[in-house]
Image (cartoon, rainbow, N blue to C red; front, top):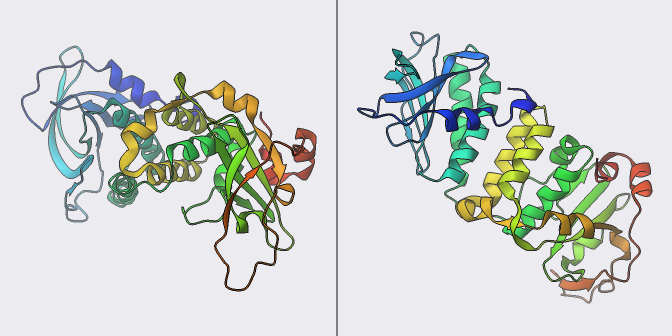
Amino acid sequence: MTNSDNDILLRLFRGLDSVQLRGADHFAAVTIPSFVHYRLAKDSRSRPTLLLAVFDTGRTSSAPPIMLRNIEVQHDVHCHIHYAGGATESAAFTVIRCNSDSETLHALFLRVCATVLDQIGPDATRAAVLYAVNRLVELFRSLERPATKTIVGLWAELFVIERSCDPTLMLSSWHTSASDLLDFSCGEQRLEVKASSRHLRQHHFRLEQLLPPLGSRCIIASLFVEPAGAGVSISELVATISGEVTDIQIQTRLHALVFQSLGEKWETGAQERFDYEAARDSLRFYDALAVPRIAVPLPNSVSDVHFISDLSGLNPISDQHLKSSKNLFAACVSR
């Protein structure tokens, strides 16, 4: 699907009628535009389901079903499909079903499924479906594990990506592990995002974050992240970023890192809202070497030093300077 059709599955799902269905293999469905062999469906419990017709089913035996807390996958299921207007269809499909009643997870599931369709193409082979399904299942396994990042921290990083003039480069540079020292890394450039909810530019640092490797440079993004009932959620930031990125692998990377970061806190994490305008107006960039820090070298036997530094007295880096630095730093400038 094109980036302009980012939420097409969500719109199609919301347009499906709730009908009386007789069993788990009965669905109210619609054919997905540009993917005539696939159906977007609503099951008997009104949960979103993706139905994929596979064309080389006779070449290999059916893969075993996968049952997780929030998703299930079954292959070669004989489905009974009910269309608007009364038409029906009976055929075999791979069934990918969201096993949650949460509308928040429904939206996440459907956005990820849009990426899955782009991965497998309009005429799915068994191998392509299994590959895409395995990646999808691994995403949803992340939602059963502990969160790897605070909600505020994740929101702040996504905000910096969302406002970037090059979100694809930002996503390519985004860290892959919670244990990574800095949030973004591209060549010799590093970026660390720090959020405060107290209108003070006082941020927690590890000493190593302010001592970039020889030949590299690190900047600090500082912003205020405040709860706001009418604000913007992580789910909405992800939707906006997905709409700006055309590379399917980069979209998949975005979803994977967000799912991994939210973990079992996904329901509250994806929907908690923060003040977008306050974040936008407060965002500043600073040279890491200018941030007040503990002097080095450290005394013998001292390590893993953490401290809070106040950045309010520092001069921020201008957009013009960021642009002239190119690559990751230039991408930080808003579009």
